[in-house]
Length: 154
Image (tube, rainbow, N blue to C red; front, side, top):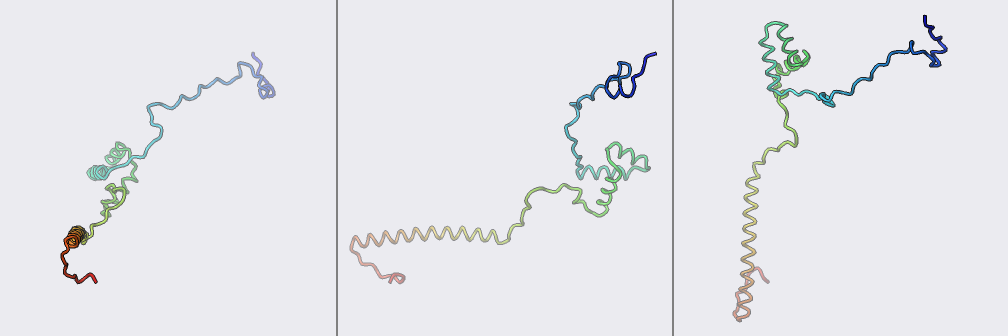
């Protein structure tokens, strides 16, 4: 009969080959088939309404449970969706558009744009007319023709 080591020998690490624990292999690395990080499932409004319609058609409790297992849902999610539907919050079931919200157009914006275009056109026409008048004054001065006095020049 083999001799078992004493407690002092075990503490000192002098255990024999017979008393050692079997070596357990380290767990294998994570499976390459699994994603690195799980992500939260997002149900669209159509999916939520489809699942709610199926559970409404299910006559017994077992049918609802089968639907929940198939979809991978808890009954609390189904309860929340039913509350939202009963409250008439269909907007909560549709995904909201992200980003900056559009502002309603100003009813006077079109008129303002038309007036600005008209003002720019008239300003260009006035500049052309003043240039023509200046040329006419210089030609009259070179030819020695007298000009009629204008009201705006002193």
